[in-house]
Amino acid sequence: MAVLPSLVWNPTTACSDRRGHPVSLVVVHRWGVRFTSQEQEAASYHGVINYFRDRSHQVSAHFVYPGSAVPNEATQMVRYADYAWAEAAFNPSSVEVESADAIWLHKDDAGLRQLARIVAFLLHRYQLPAVWSHRRGFCRHADLGAAGGGHTACPTTDLGLWRIFVGLVQAEHDRGHFRAVWGR
Image (cartoon, rainbow, N blue to C red; front, top):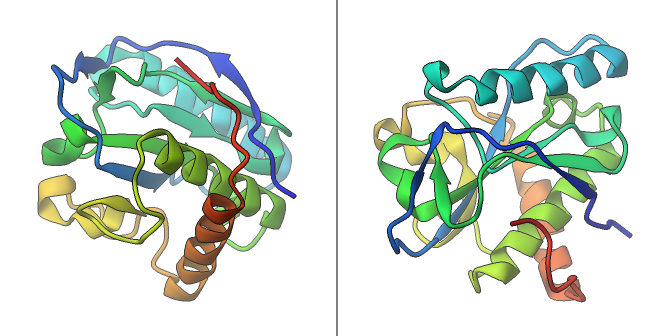
């Protein structure tokens, strides 16, 4: 049974105030560093966090999730009340989870399951349906097209794996029993 990981608060200034925009989408990303080992994946996790902390890069995410490379941990970098700089036109209405490459390369099944729990929690928090949609629910960054920045392979082009993930998110959403608070 998947549980939400412990959350480290490591804020970035690469974000903006939502100004009351309602959240309608949870967007899943992949950091896109070549996977070689769990040790290297853990180093990439910390590298992604450092990259997002540097405002000059003009990119961020609400959450960075390393999967099993750093067990039972995720980092929150942007408050829920703010939007991350991740998907261009979709920024004000989305929450992002940047996830480890191993998850999307069939090398971290436990990480895939825990990521599904994270996405299900966020859907629950915002009272969104557990459906794959680029309008209201959750989606891949790739589903947002040019208006979302044109990242056509993020987090995966393996639709079989993505559909498995969709099923896991739906099962976690149906299971419920979420903690009252996770994140800021």
